[in-house]
Image (cartoon, rainbow, N blue to C red; front, side, top):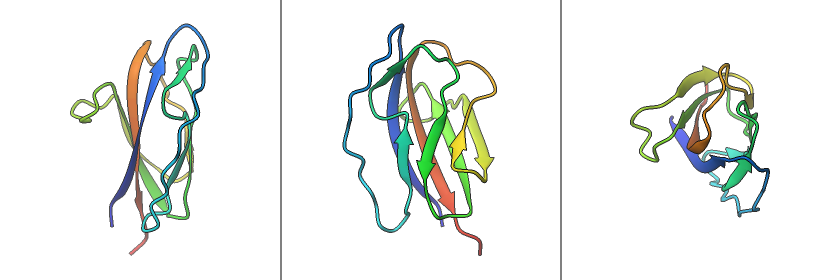
Length: 102
């Protein structure tokens, strides 16, 4: 079962957070926590955090909303992720796809 949530974030020279409503979908139990929508930071290696009760996850980070050329596409087992490399300043989108054990 593949389930996903998508968020958009921006990296600029200042830190500003504009709170946005997180939509919780009951069927997947994935809540994207941080960075929030329209998050602005100078940290080029931000921590991506989400909440879920699933077993493993695929995190995808891209500078395009259609996720056609992901900069990060990794399977992880924890509910947080820090990129190994720094992201350039600009707009980024992220999504998490959760998997339950069969």
